[in-house]
Image 1 (cartoon, rainbow, N blue to C red):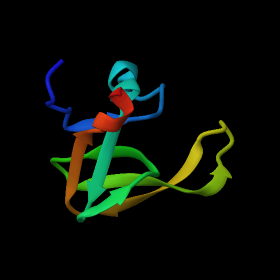
Image 2 (cartoon, rainbow, N blue to C red):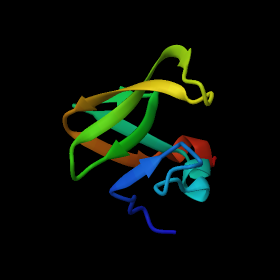
Image 3 (tube, rainbow, N blue to C red):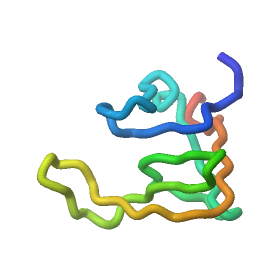
Length: 82
């Protein structure tokens, strides 16, 4: 597999942008130059991330998220592959 990541990726299994194989490899996100560990979904071309907002969940049990706009830099987390 190449190190090229998709433009958009989601952790929600019901999303069309969900990719279980890629998520198992470990995808890291730098947002505006800061490492984020609570990213639920991202889109590089549109410049946004959805981050989990605490422990709150909706009626379907999915975490509540907030959309933040800025520079999104996804990368494969090489530490998880060791």
